[in-house]
Image (cartoon, rainbow, N blue to C red):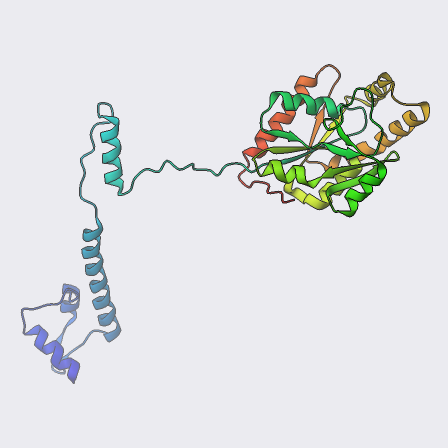
Amino acid sequence: MLFRRIFTSLTHSNIQPPFFSSEISSRLAFTNAGVRLPDLNQFRLRFQRAQFLSSNCRMGDARRPPTVPIPPVATADKAELFRALEAALGSSFKADPLSQPANPLIIVISGPSGVGKDAVIKRLREVREGIHFVVTATSRAKRPVEVDGKDYYFVAKEEFLSMVERNELLEYALVYGDYKGIPKQQIREFMSKGFDIVLRVDIQGAATLRSILGNSAVFIFLVAESELALVQRLVDRKTETTETLLVRIATAREEVKHLQDFDYVVVNAEGKLESAVKLVESIIDAEKARVRQRSPVI
């Protein structure tokens, strides 16, 4: 009865709410029984929708930035054009880098004896800035051409074992009867300065570092062009006895089987050192451009 009175008063009035469309009006039929009313739920939904649209229209007008004339691109002063574009967009252009600076890398270079690890690393340090080669500590005797503190830190066996007890080494191993290990402090110091770290280790050391660093470091496997070429290099070094030469060749055959455990393989062919170094540089550049950066923690 109450709704009948409301609609009867509306039909006798010149005032119509925004939701009261001609479609609804046409559906009002006067019969002997009175006025047939529209569905109440439809009535409520139309009213709420009309209120929402009306409110959004008013808010949109308030938020819309004023019209800013943009000068022709071909003839406009650049500073004036930039100000007009910023005003039209409602915000200033930012000079911040769109990508974050690349993280320092830990690059692990390994491979069998005689593949030229030292030669590749030496040339890499000469042609690329921001590289720090971590000098490995070893208990073996110094060769005539080697320099203490540059090629290795040569220490007595007792001193090396003391370093192990003090937890000063990231990794260490017994190789051909001698100890080799990587001091942690060097890595921390130079990574904090933004340097990429290069580690030279044998296959056993690379496996240990993989278990410690996981995928946070880059592992590169260096090989000769063939087994025959590798044996020729070992012979030409003239630093091995017959027994140690046989041991190194047999070990190299086993070490090559671990190639699939590395991220990259680089062939250091005889007389093509520059090509091998350029490939290592390309690997570093590619790693620097990764969207998801490696983040080693020592």
